[in-house]
Image (tube, rainbow, N blue to C red; front, top):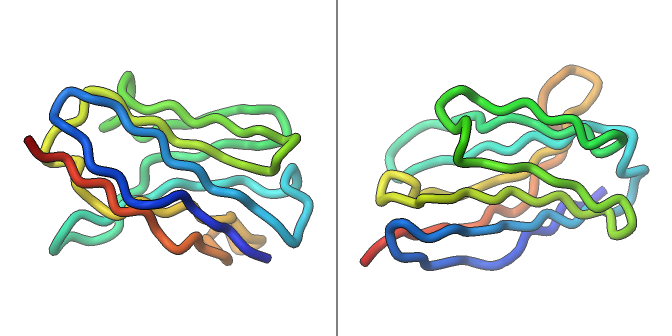
Length: 117
């Protein structure tokens, strides 16, 4: 099982960013994908999840209206898009496969998103 994320991104405040997470080694539609982030010096923060099988999403309240999760089953790739970026969004973003214990059992390598003017 592998989750491979896209590379680091640098954005200006107010811009948008889209991070990808390509899954392999398992049936993509059989597991939820969770997105979490970790800002400098902070703990992990859950952003929500997507059900690749039907595209169903659940977003953490903090990100409602600014975040969109999508999943392309033809390429086994999940995406997170975050809009109206601000400096506080600077963080490493991770995708995780939600395993049978309702926790991430496989993680992507992380994508650094830096928001700076």
